[in-house]
Image (cartoon, rainbow, N blue to C red; front, top):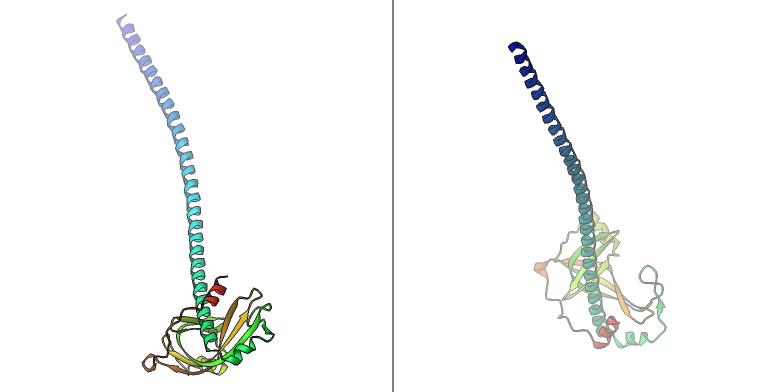
Length: 236
């Protein structure tokens, strides 16, 4: 009898342990389901954050590109303004230097501008070639050989039409650098637009010599303010 009771007690204990184990398994299963749901949410959030980061990186790249474009446009606008001021100053000097005969020539019907030099709608009102001395401040190789030249505060850009001089440069027979002065025959063509505005283009027709800085004289005249009528024309 006692043996049967002990066996029953042991069976009850085993059943109790089994039930406890089953209950623990159920709790673990529920906990795993909760963790799996939280993991799915975390993965979704991770994917969303990755998409946001990619979109933000794209926006930053576009903003940087637009910033670089705006900076380039600002530099080009500033250069255009500097060139316009230089041309206005040169026209002022040329009008002051022009003789009576040249002023009378302006009263005759002007010649049409050639497409290579000015717009076909513009007309040539003056075409003068003089020996000048300018300081060399820039060299450009944009399809053709161009120089940026300075005389006092005035700056101009002019292509080089002296083929013999260009051949000497190619053969490395002539050397020059920024700061050197160039003695040359400078052609200045003044055009008039249909609106009445004037502008000028410059061409180095012949290079007569290169003057190093230690041999330069004070050949730069002081810059003069623009006459009122020309300044008004430039603003219009």
